Amino acid sequence: MDDNKILFVDLDGTLIKEDLSNLAFMDYLKKKPFKTLYHLIIFLFKGKPYLKEIISADFRVPIESLTFNKGALDYVRDIKNRHRVVYLISGSHQILIDQFQNHLKIFFEAFGTNKKFNMVGKNKVKFINESLNINNFDYFGNSKKDLPIWNYCKRIIYTNVSDKLRIVINSSTLEKIEVKENFK
Image 1: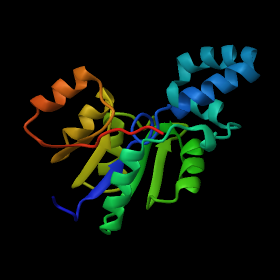
Image 2 (image 1 turned 60 degrees about the vertical axis):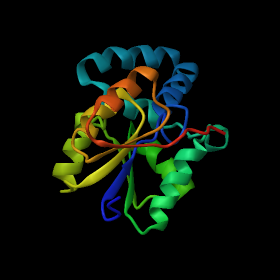
Image 3 (image 1 turned 90 degrees about the vertical axis):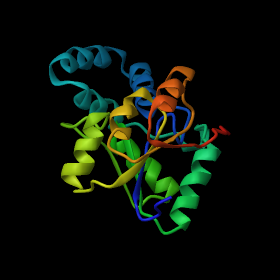
């Protein structure tokens, strides 16, 4: 394993079982049902980043009730202990990512969706390559949305994948590392 590579780690479904954007949306819907309908209509014109910002603005991440993937966290800590740079990168809004990062404090830096940029799939690769000027990296994820990112890596690092995605991953010629999920 090339220990000089930077590692980018997904959050929702990888480090935690939950999706922070979904939690924020359900909270917003519960507290402000009519405003939610209004923002859903605006979302049709302004897109997901807009909606993620609205629902995340006043949401407090319930860190104490999240279901953490101990296997994934142990893997990330092991990589970090080898003095590799590890970033958190997520489709959840930066407001939520900052709260998570402030609690965990194991990442060099954390990146999420903002008002104009949805940090998902190919957008993650674009951000990593263009904004951070990083072209040689590993990526740790769990979703079919991660396939475009793994296409730019030399190694597929994954956890908590569906059987269907496992078949796709196993058909790849890239090196693969499976981290067994252990949600607690």
